[in-house]
Amino acid sequence: MQDAQQYIEKGAASTIVDEVTTGNTASSCGSGQIDVYATPFMIAAMERAAVSAVDHQLPDGWITVGISVDIQHLAATPVGGEVEVLARLTEVDGKRLVFAVRAEDNEEEVGRGTHQRYCVHRESFVRQVEDKVCRRGEN
Image (cartoon, rainbow, N blue to C red):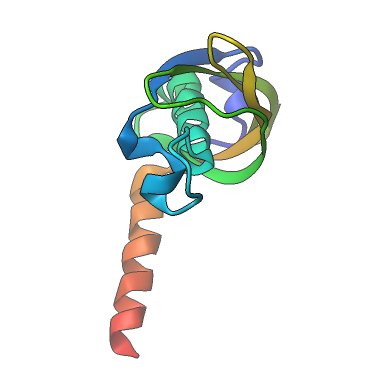
């Protein structure tokens, strides 16, 4: 595949909902000391939404991998809240995909930014990772 645009059009989008539990708070993952939705979990939800928006449109054997995040976490969401996360594809440049991502709870915008993914052939990518593991074993 040279250009993802033959498979995916700008505007592809997906929304997921993440419930805030004690397991995805800042205090639970060490990114803070308060029981509110943690930035790493918000970013992971944004990535999941982006994957959901496009991976099913790629040809067999192709997937996307995350390569960049530029995110602002704007508001705290306490345990028991729900965060709705939207990823919308805004740019296709060869195999590089750019998403606008946004998170909201029922009161306000929680986070926003951009996330980039790259289209890769799954088998080739896994082989590269396995080769890296083998090289580490030789040292």
